[in-house]
Image (cartoon, rainbow, N blue to C red; front, side):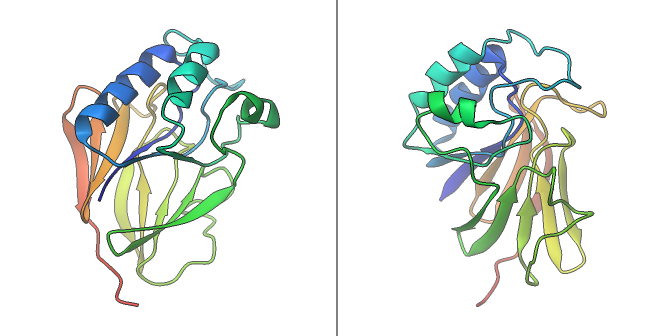
Length: 185
């Protein structure tokens, strides 16, 4: 199963459109959004083509393919206009024999871990910094930011294809990848 992970769209119609083009071209079966979907937040500059209403329209067209997590910029008002659930603080996802604890990252992250078992994978956004690394007996992943990357990173998303997790720039180049280890439970 191929899955596309993305975080921190922050209301950018430009980057949302590009993300959805990549999603459709990838052959992925699900789009996992790790929060901060519509609002840019008070600490961020406005992203390119900030147009939350256009983002709503684009994402709602894919409502049956999206799993979403609430980010620190997502609110109940956002949920009123989006036709897929966004208010969960986390999700436990099992794909391809891998167990993911998916969250936005403003509460649980590498420095404040949720309850996890050896071999589990923590995936989050929030920092706008891409990451794919082992951390003791777990793996920590962050697809970076679709619209407002930080730390000199390009605009990114990630693809899980089997057990290969690849963080890609929006121009299609693989920026970082890691082979994830399946747990045998």
